[in-house]
Image (cartoon, rainbow, N blue to C red; front, side):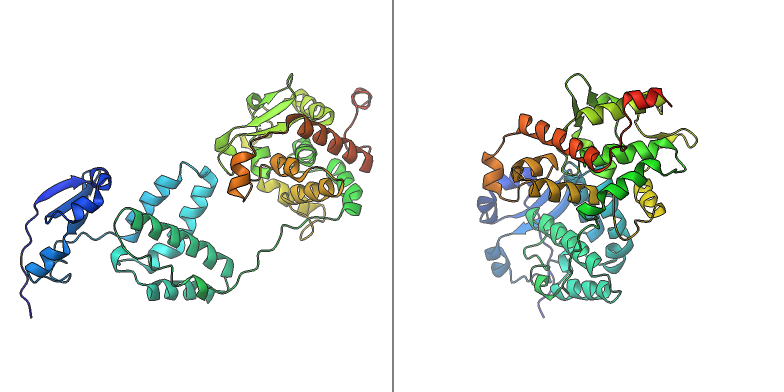
Length: 373
């Protein structure tokens, strides 16, 4: 058995400096300690040095830095936070805290093998949570990629496991059929909800703009330019962290006037005065359940319904996707197709509002009807 030998550290360098010439450093013949933000992250040892001194990787374990999966995951989340919305960050943290960290507790990320990953995935699948298994696998795969890019590991242990995951069929959000639209629209404006007319108006604006529920319920008056007839949702409130413009139809402008006249709040469109807080977007799905649409319609279903009908009417799919704030999966198309389709999107949104009123003429009260109340 080879006796353990102490290894002398020849030089300490930062990760940033090391990445400028990694091949040169690797062949320098020195033992180099690599640091990041003044913390040791790994040692670099020339293979020739190991052979010359008859050392093995086991001999060097006493000097090799070990990193917990939790610590590396925190760095990964911090890096991704520039691209993710606060809501998505909290969702990721919640599932990692609940399942991932407890399973790999006490294990260094350098020691995690493919079999460990598979055991973890099988444990989640045993709960029949195949959707969660896929999400956690994507999280772990991305964390390991980050560990590899920062030099902590050489092989990503999740690569060999991907094909072993149980299939998960993604179900589309529930939405009604076109012929059911008039009845639902009538219920949305005539039903009474605990939050009062605020929810009725929220459903009207959701129908006319088909934005995401969280984008709607967090809307602020400062985001609206009534003169220009546009609503600009800032990047921090968008799923893809990119600002989004919604072109306001005549009907949408009328609803904004009604909301402002009700004076729900000076800052937010949808505010619960009794609870002193913004009305949560979950109230929309709960209200749909209240009027009999549980399992039939979701807040996200308004987007799917609008997309289906607009595509059937022959509108340019690129315009529809842009208005839905979807990112083109084709990177080449995305790079060359920067057009905002401003006029076409405006025309489409006005057509959509006119169509909604054709389905339910009483969906939006006219100014004259309001005066007669």
